[in-house]
Length: 456
Image (cartoon, rainbow, N blue to C red):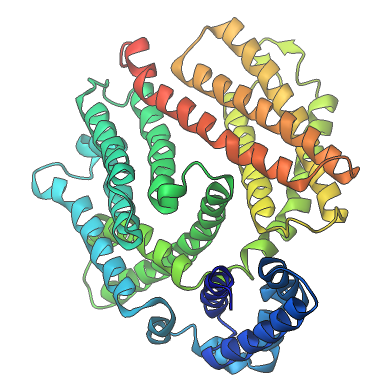
């Protein structure tokens, strides 16, 4: 058979082998059907490449095949959730590397305490500046080692972490100042996107590669939340058991179990995504289907509430509803969650599927988010005019302007798609091309804001 087709079949076979419900015997059987289809199509006059694509179509989507096999072999699916069985698919060294870097991250989070920088109020500033740097650096190393990234990409990744470490620890931040907290929050965004560079490796210019990282981010968050819930239960049981025998484990839980567990979970969650991606793919898209209608309803309710309460009419305390500082922060969080839902639903969608009811619901959600963002922006401008500029206000204003442009472009392209006047790929490319904008803004907040506001 044609060598290029053989390489395509090899890539397909490796992808199929990662499906949790499809075993090695099943992959061999499917490959046999695939080769038979290719031979028949080549005999009819198709080129080998064309025959491969048509045969894949006839064979069916792997997600559908996974579900079919899972129904017939549900015991196999559960057995493959056992850690020991994943080594047959992912290789025995991947778990060892993950555990090694997880342990390093857990140790790194405690080294400052051994040097006299505790996790109490006196040392809180250090951890605000370095809470993202310590665990994410080991996650980036995990991906660099496992993917065999080219030296240039690895150098850029490590250099970005080094620059972040120098900036965060050399700037003379005021104790408990606004710019220190802003930098600590935004450096997480910067370093997470740098981790994305290590994740995609040498394909960082590729839109599909960036979408892969968006998909990974959603799945990583799901696993991290599950690990966090399990860690909370473990901490509660630990406190209860030791308290029953007259001992107080509060210091151990607060200063060792929780911080070390959280740092290690960052790497372990990433390994779980890599090792069990075919299982989580059945969970995360379901979450988007569930929460998209709920957040759409929430956004519509916010718009109605804002209009009813005349949120943009100034009072003696500023704009009534949308002008409240805490509510503005909550609205920004809601908008970011909506953007996350949109991104992940795009990453989980079948690209060539026609527009359906869920795409139309997403359009409503995006338009509603756009309206809320406009209301928030007007309220923010009003607060800046009434009370003056501050680091927090300008950082929020910049974020909302970026969100406004992102949501406006997404709404327009989504409208064209549901009206069959645009392609889904255009909408997907818009989102992946916009990722560097968030990176640039977060980096500006980290590097420019502190000196611009005299480190307060």
